[in-house]
Length: 314
Image (tube, rainbow, N blue to C red; front, side):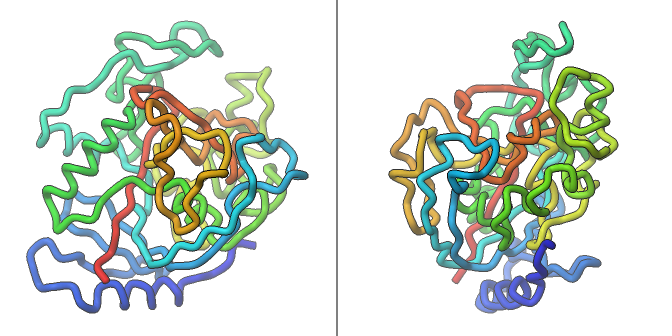
């Protein structure tokens, strides 16, 4: 069962913002219907949910089915202070506001299988505006690079009092687990995940019958509107599934050099970066919370998006 941490979130928010100055860009704190405290810095900024400080074990145990060799060695990581995480993956609508205001170009060549089903390759005319499947502005943005995500972060910081960034890999896994230790945030069985996540399931199997899928239906073949599924114990949506998410860390093949205090690991191959969280097409083993994937920093893919973090004033 996903744990309830509402009280911790409320206390963390109160501590983090008690000293915030009265200014036009100061965070606005409000409650959602599930009572998790959130903040939003501006009308076009993403809604942010406060995640409490804490400690956890990153990675997967050696006996976990589907485990990759890069998911270890397991290490204890301490998240020393509350931080905020975008409640949803950044949507296409949110990203389009950034594009209009910044003038940043939209890249083509997104990796897709629109040319030949089941065979993914860069396609020149495929972009975030037309990823090869139907989307609306409340779907997560796809076909964006790590550099695009960093540019969006910079734009948010210029509009507000600052503190925005990508999540570190450790922060991402801490937020995704939300106090759980099982292979999936909802428990040990992928087949119980459809209420919580948009991954490869019986719906996807109708289009890709040779795929290994979960034996449940989440109702989406490709991306779904953000927030379509149940949140995790920290009140965050789509931490697993919908789209993979760029994080700050450079690519590594183990946790040997991972900082123990939640900071990003910048000692790996920084021509590539990690994505976490799986996507609409992720097989069961790849939908585990510990799964890690390394991509070129300039990769544009119909299954990769991002969410943001915010360092809180103390």
